[in-house]
Amino acid sequence: MKVTLKYFGQLVDVMGNHEETREISSNNSNELLEQMKQNNPIGHIPFQLAINDKLIDQKAAKKLNDGDVIALLPPYAGG
Amino acid sequence: MKKVFINGPISSDFIGESIAKHQTKTSIGAHNIFLGQVRADAVDGRNVAAIEYTCYEELANAKLHEIREEAFEKFDLICMHIYHSLGTIKTGEVCFFVFVSAERRKEVYEATEWLVNQVKDRTPIYGKEIFEDKTHQWKVNT
Image (cartoon, rainbow over all chains, first blue to last red; front, side, top):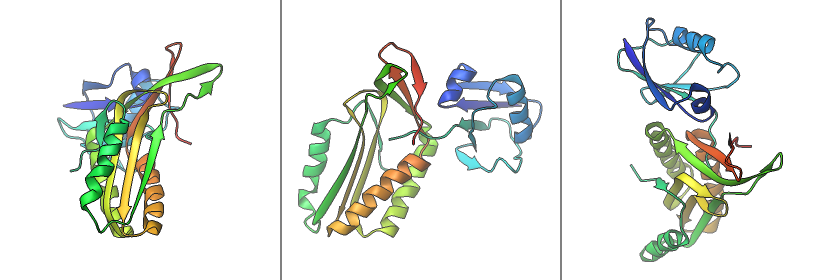
């Protein structure tokens, strides 16, 4: 299945883009994040996760569905 | 959903017109305004020339709506406006405008500070500090 990943702040630099669509094999949010951390140097950047515009608790794995939009949100810096 | 995000800096004209629009609301006895301005911070000998603001607009608008509702419950306000810039804002330009109105002054002081803090803490907005030499770093709120 395919999901859209959106990156913000420092993660834009590290991932090299704002947004990408990825084919993923697991439908578990924690597994996806683990894979991303293994393949990209993002382990040192704290971030919250939003699925389809809703913040989620990363301690509990969420089931992902085809077409989900997953946003990785480092600490906010408005103002 | 009230419009919060403005492309480019928030001009003095816009701020002045916002104030003028309240002259018909004669139950108001106190306005308070917070203006955030882009500061020319110096980091390791490099000076910030501008901040490029981006946001996750869908979530940001949802959070701003929550903040607005909570503010009206928490404080006895007549009117409230929040504006934040997106795009490149040069040093000295205004990027954040919070405008609160009530019958009396006590409420507006407290509400303004609360709102500014909530927007900074709960809204997914990002600032890329662009230095004069075109290098950049991501802004961190302190």
